[in-house]
Amino acid sequence: MPTTHASRTLGVCSWSLQPASPHDLAEKLTQTGLSAVSLALDPIRRGDWDLDETRTALNESGFTIASGMMEAKGEDYSSLDAIERTGGLRPDEHWQANLDAAHANADIAKALGLSLVTLHAGFLPADPNHPEHATLTDRLAKVAAAFGERGIAIALETGQETADTLLAFLAQPRLAGVGVNFDPANMILYAKGDPNEAMTKLAPHVFQLHMKEAVATSVPGQWGTEVRAGDGEVDWPRFFEILSTLAPEVNVMIEREAGDDRIADIIAARDLARMHIA
Image (cartoon, rainbow, N blue to C red; front, side, top):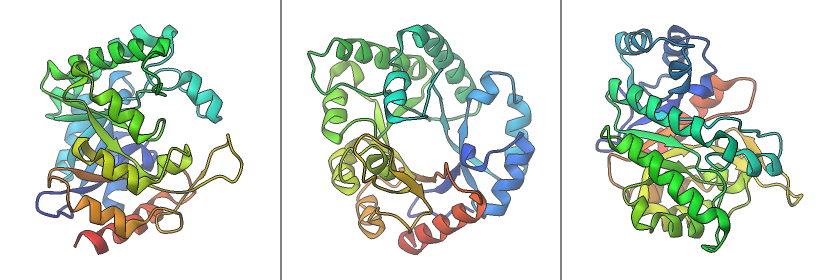
């Protein structure tokens, strides 16, 4: 059974395990000792994975799909400048494809019985008079509507803007009901503020958390470095203290996007989380 605090679930992001197929995902999940997963939906949308096969492989192995994840088209993470240009819903040339993907992913999420899907919005401008402010508000509202029509909430992953900027966006009436997928490491990787201060500010809007670790860069304008949980700069005792104030349905999904031994690193994060949650 998944580790819980009340009904809180500890799971792992499917893409962290780099699975080749639904059955490979189930096998790797078994090795982590976790029973819940945040599932990347786009392999199903693109036809790389079969929906029924995915559902069957996970269900028969006893795994719960806690949430889904949608990726945006054309994202380039080779540098901070590149992802600022290409991230999330920002690029005009990919907007229609991303909206179409949102509708398709929403159908998949509904078929899987999900109530939450996460995504990166892209770098949200802090200035409400910025020409892209209204555009991104409109795009987020349309994506939220695509999922909302099917009874599914969306949560925006943190890091590409400060907590204050994200709060200002979420305060807009058109984005009522849009939540936050809080990732403490991303705040460090993108140099967007202290993770626990940001988590405290965003707490009323947090629908899910990623458990990921990082150290800050010493070179402005460059990435920080993702590391194994416990080896970086996230104040985990404080993180879990804040978590304890959140609603029990706010789940924690371990994410590991670097390293050569993902399963061992995920187990290390699992043990760290269980020490605090239990």
